[in-house]
Length: 145
Image 1 (cartoon, rainbow, N blue to C red):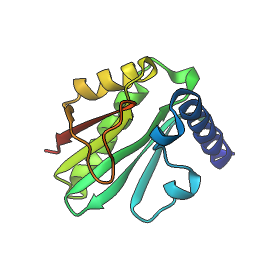
Image 2 (cartoon, rainbow, N blue to C red):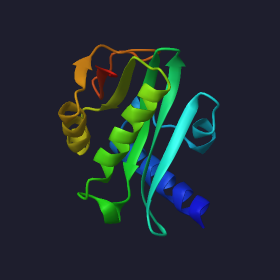
Image 3 (cartoon, rainbow, N blue to C red):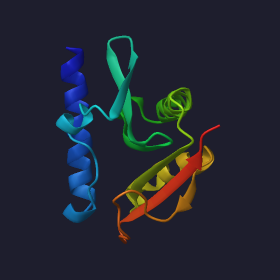
């Protein structure tokens, strides 16, 4: 049951990205990619209900990329994204990362995500890793302390 809820929320996430972002600007990880050895994935539960999930991808020994944060619709505006983000930042620190960056969309749909990241110390930056400048993407980063 738990695995099915995670897969269903991931599919919802990917469908929203497909509906919101043009194909060349979609960077969300699918299920197989989330199983990669360079990816750490966490889910947050309220009883038997999946509240959300988040992942980061190791880029090198000092640098990680925040990937695939999602809150279940029934848990929106309840602080789940903040809990997930704080957990990711703590885990990244425990694993010795010095910096974490992310890519998110520039569309209005992504405004709450950008506000959350700004509130938690992220700043806008240039593309990182293999990303290229894209009018549909913005890039953010912060040091991990």
